[in-house]
Length: 375
Length: 230
Image (cartoon, rainbow over all chains, first blue to last red; front, top):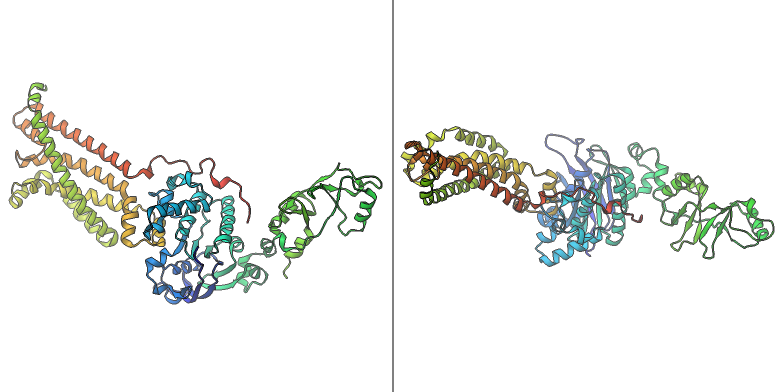
């Protein structure tokens, strides 16, 4: 795997002939640095210059002034063909070559670079595997025989084929339905954990930007950079009226999408097993701030909530009449999803389990709402 | 009405005239193809020349073939060139229109993707644009071939050395002998049908991606399979 490279915009402007700044697609004095291995999302309304900015990196558009560096090299000094072959490029319509099979599409850049045919095939299979497509089933197909989501995966595989240090993605998931989009987003994040490429990602969807970006650049009509910061910072402290409006009134909810259960200090629930002494447990419940009892099995896996009226004052606790142990959360669940699951189940607390299914703790609605407030 | 005995006696003539017909057709269509390809490439690179090219080739197309063959005799004499030149000129309009339409039909996102992954201009043209234009290029080739096969008959005006199967038609008219007219006419039609079918089959071979489209989202598509959230 090649190492990722930083991408730096230095006072980059693009003006179109006969027009001043403020025209659709124009970019005005853009300066920002995307550190190596990070995802930077360019987001903004249409015509804000986000796609123009992206295309100036692989020189599909040449800037009017300023310069763009990959690593320490000005892209304008590099051979344009060689430059583009060293940058992965994914577009919304995917742009798969319809007359080439999936395998040939994926191997495009290796072929252009003159790799041995055997090595091209090997690499194509490896990449299809990586994006979750079985090479045996997909290599020989033509793009017309693929679904939208499959095409987009092939597009990502093609962009990664020559192991580029930088990946440009122009609304890559804009043309697929919301369910598939969510899945592709998650898979890209999973891939990025292994690949750690420098990714510049364009979208007009602020939710997607917050979800995907290590850094988010909010751009404003006229090609101005309105704010460049981590998603949590943009949600907590929008730099201007424009950013606040663009981010939306539900900033608190959006912030929840950035926090995971593992970021919280988990409360330990009161637990007991069937057969425990009722009186002792009753005493513990009465003394707890969250007076609900969770019954667990021998391996600490949750069985269900036990209403305190059903805890016998003497004798052993029995596991009947319990409320189902729902919802179950894991440490990677976002607070936004957790809140939604709690509301759905109509309960106050969700049970967090570890990968073995044993109880780790609980998350209550109050804890979640606490975190939604601006810090 | 048909004199089968005469037909049986002239199978050799039929074969040699068919070969001549094929020779004149193939040569003219090939030359026309190459010239038109150049004109089409020029047109897509420099849009401004497309209208004039269409105007000129369209004007050539309107010249009656009955006039054009004899008109060339003082210039080129009674040579193959005299037979072939009009055939080439008539094919140009058909070719140019189809070629340009074929190149225009290549979706812009595919061209952008090709540029983005680092095709050179020439590489993009030969590896992406030409293959994707093949359906319309072959459509032009079929049209031009069928129309040229019909026109080769007219070159029989230039005398017995020309005309392919059209020779029999002119002979039949001269001798009021329907068998010969039928033989020339039907032979020419058969040739057109055979060539057209052959070209269609070749197109199928050249463009396997246009055949047998599986409906998108085939069963077992990964889109619908569960995946863990990151």
